[in-house]
Image 1 (spheres, rainbow, N blue to C red):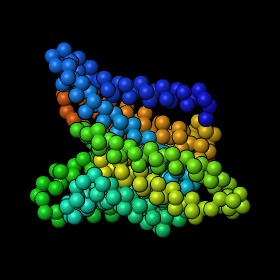
Image 2 (tube, helix red, strand yellow; image 1 turned 90 degrees about the horizontal axis):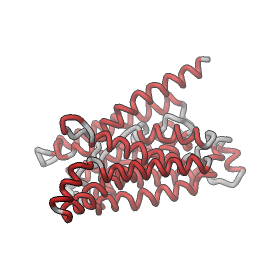
Image 3 (tube, rainbow, N blue to C red; image 1 turned 45 degrees about the vertical axis):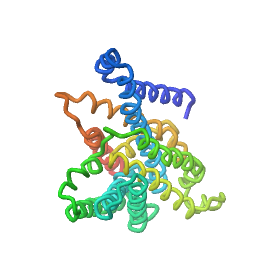
Image 4 (cartoon, one colour; image 1 turned 90 degrees about the vertical axis):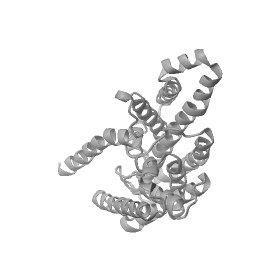
Length: 322
């Protein structure tokens, strides 16, 4: 990727992050005029964690999507379409409502276990070089199973308000998260992104085939397990705090590969930047919703991402039929 593209992405990301802190501006300035300490508390304790979570979660989804698409050699592979986010949400719900552990560490552990189980099941069902139809069917089956088990877990939960309480996990939300929660998600997410960047050469070599990659000295089995574990850890930690948010991990890597000449490994960093930009923009769209309504951010990303996904499937089918 050119340096100019990197600078432009970072500038856009910084601008959206600043806008996320400032918008809506009028209520914040009015509060600052009345009570500066209260206005500062709103900015630091509410808006800053929300912006950090949007940046962190979006970056993690983008990097994870790029790594998974490179691993499966398929542009339709992403954390939500492979069942990773659904599995992570299932793990969080089971941990909180059936086992009764609601601490952030316990939720993250459950989310990571659910995401890891979904990815391993996908690898078992579809294989490392799955065709598009096989990957989609396997991912949809895993997502449907995880969704059904999540509903079952909520139905069997001792609390009669379990469905309402789990709304954030089911639809995704960044509202009313604390700075400690943002830090709890950001630490493993950014660590996983940095570690995923270390497998960039191995992912690029996989485009030439597993035999060629092994001849170049890369341990393919280790690389595959490394990507699965890192993806599950990073996405699971974010899902535990913010719930399941879809389509960012699908869209960001596709645009990133256009900036890197189709190299899946080199697309990890730009995909992370694009993912953070997309989720920050989606959160700004949520804040400017009409009539003062609060929309789940997962609904916004789905409304934007689903048409793109349908176009991508139609485009791939058209290319295959030529």
